[in-house]
Length: 404
Image (cartoon, rainbow, N blue to C red; front, side, top):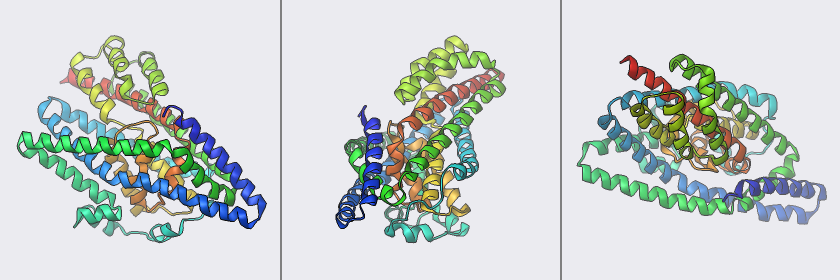
């Protein structure tokens, strides 16, 4: 799996070259080749898609059950969770405000034809009233089948919180089952990602046949926008530490440098935890009881850069497909990006976790393969952003604790 990002990029290049050659051939055999290869990309996306709904459900249940337990069990944890939600929501709103304008400068609208199976869903513009009603699904199973992710996540949250009101042994059994299901589903995802280069090649080939090198220009524009947004949110972490945590900017930057280096190389927030603990306690002199509570929770749950992937990714794919995202589509995109940031596991090559947002916005799932193809560098940058905010939040909560 370590070579997968490189293989994905090679698949994009090969798919683009093959698409250009097919377009230049103007021969019946070339069109037949595309018609044979293209379904492989759809099959690959469907293989990921079939795991997303159950994976979101079980992980949201586990996250909400664990959150409620921690709030009751650990003093001061309520403020920690409120701050987690606040910073992730702020990140989602910033991405929703900045991404459309930035992408409009770099990415052409409607460059990729909509898949016929997705045209009806993309054309439908739900009303705000319909959005509000969908928050409480009359049938959670039907909501899952229809891809109504907002209502399904609300049901999963309520179910997870409800487990804190039943017998502890029964709750432990439910959580253990959900974790086991999640682990099994991640194994399936791992299998699917291993053949990802084939799927990406099959997705890029027909796109390159239609729009040529514009696909590479669009992907480069998307990566530049993600880089800019990661920089904005990371700068926000420094501002938060200075203004909210009372830490000198130079001191915070020096303490944060080693965790950031580990984050970029590993693309795993959890891998930075020992370095974060050392930075918090030795370099910033934060109380051990604060860093011992906040940082493990933050590295496991606080994925403030998740909206950079999901919100910006959804807006980007909607733009290249020529789909208009009105308010009734953007509100679920923002809400689901916040919810799933806590419930979906943070794993490398994690662009596939954006699928719930795609489903809520009526965006073709095939677009996820395009994002997966170039996710290595954005994923590393998002991990750096996550770690930066983790330490900044710890400084703020430490200051609150001292004031109390």
